[in-house]
Amino acid sequence: MIVALVAVAAGGAGTGAFTTAALDRGSSIPIAGDENGVVGLGVSRSVQSNATSRLVTVTNTLDTSTRVTVSLDENARDDADLVVNGATEGDTANVRLAAGKRRSFDVDVAANATRSTLGFDVTATGGGVSVSAPDRSTTIST
Image (cartoon, rainbow, N blue to C red):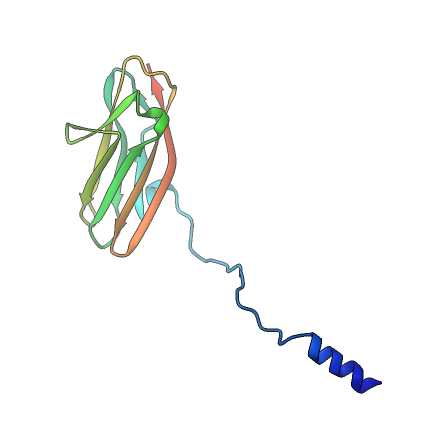
């Protein structure tokens, strides 16, 4: 009787192997504020309507050159254009930023802006690292 139970258990239980697994792993990566991140961000508290104002200053703290992209949120695209070094870029601006350097991205907000906040995203890629700072925003002052 015991032999039959062991045979059924061994035959019906399978090997116990698996083909996929989802495992949670802890991380010891410290979380930093925007200013102290891998790519530092200095977001302005507000921008002015009917004017060009600084939106964000990006600092490359990596040891290599990075490509930085600032993109206005879809809802902000009718109300504003990004400006870099005095040149209007539109809804998205890309710059190459050397290690240790910073660059300001300005925004020209229309006089008839329909929103009270201006949303944008920042991404940076370089040296095998890609970082993203989505859903940043500032207020629009009239």
